[in-house]
Length: 254
Ligand SMILES: [Zn+2]
Image (cartoon, rainbow, N blue to C red; front, side, top):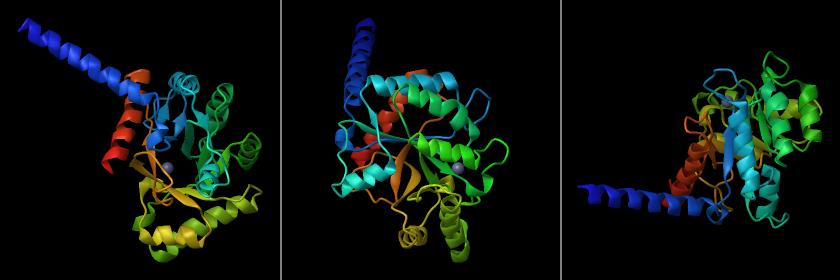
């Protein structure tokens, strides 16, 4: 019996070693897009703690990941941008003010940057980013995208409502003086073929889902995959395992 346990333990250790070996060199299979919401120490389902977030950014830097924007990814597909060896895209949904006060300063400390998807009708409301903060973020190389006007699940809406959410959110951000908006994150990961077509017609270059996986140039740009990063129960190990799961999903074509 004892020998059997020993063999099992060794097999597990080897499996983990191989697993983490793969983690060291991810982007051969595609680019990871991380999805965060809040970064704060409040007890909230959508929040990751400041310390865990910092640990993750530090890890990405140490592993040699280089942040790119979604626009740079789209340009690279057309041969107009040279991707770094280990690109990563870091995104935040909803547009919480703690992205400004907590997340971005930590990202800057580790040479990271990212994309914030704003719920446009929440701009300036309690807990949400103001227009001045959004403008300052753009100056600091943070990309701003749309997370619709009212955060309604798009696939459940009428055609008119879908179009309004998609077009108005983009126009409003641009009217308020932000750069051209090229990307949307679908609220609740909800989208359909009609939504995709409306994004194309509305001059969006892509849409981000909540589906797990990595992204290559062959990935439908209106169905980009992400890796959701909630508050980890098992620290950095869990963060690495989420990467691994996305890798497996990419291989299996999930
Ligand atoms: Zn959201």
